[in-house]
Each structure stands twice: as C-alpha cells, then as structure tokens.
Amino acid sequence: MENFLAGDLAIEARRDEDGPLVLTWRGQSHDRDPGQLLRPYFDLAVLEAEKTGRRIEMHFQHLDYFNSSTITALVRFIRTLMASRINLVVQFDARVRSQRLSFEALRPLETQSPEITMKDISAPDAE
Image 1 (tube, rainbow, N blue to C red):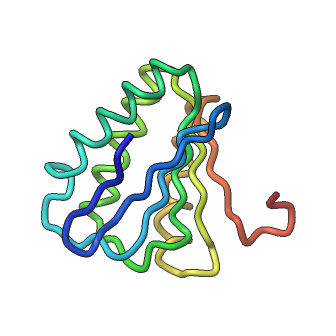
Image 2: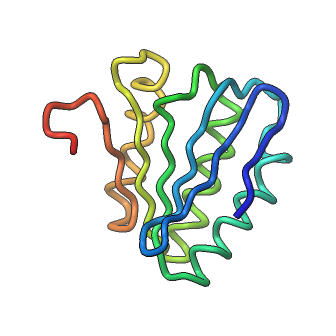
C-alpha cells in the first residue's frame, strides 16, 4: 500500500511480512472535508486488510493537529471496519490534550466492537 500525502497531512503505510498494516499519521489535518481525500485511501486499506487477513494499526502519536472533520472521517472508517469485522488498533498519546480529548471520546466504539482497540501509548501498561 502506498503512502498518503495531502497538504500538511502525511500517512506512512508500512506492512511487515507477517505483521499488521500500520498507518502512521504525521503533520496536520485541517482540511474542511478530509473525508473526500481520505475515503479512497481508507478503501484501499480495507481491501488490503481483507486480502491479507491482517489487522490495521493507526498510529496518531506523531500527528500535530487534526480538526473535528478529520474525526468524523475517522469514525466513518472505523464503522466500515466494524461492519467488515476487520481488527483495528488505534494508538494515541493522551499526554497531547487534543489527542486525549478526541480519542477518549471515541472509546464507546471500542465497547461496541471486539475488533476495535484504543491504546494510549502514554499509559503505564502500554507495550
């Protein structure tokens, strides 16, 4: 899977031979409608996960800023993964206020689906 670049947002895609598809977010996402740009990329990630049977990991700890429109696009993607029963691990850094507020608000999605895991990398029990 290719990397993604749009304005100040970059997503680095990495898949080790037997590991998950890791999407590392960097920079800033402040587009008014990021879903329009992200949706095709998310669709490719779903196809890759379905084809390989591997989980997706999204790492946000290097993301400097993202707006509420980005969260909306992310929620849509998570719901697609839930419907497809694709495992997702979301890593974030709760020491960063915007990440803590946004991802803690998404915790209910984790309780709705055993495929979704939200992981605060700053927590003492984080691996």
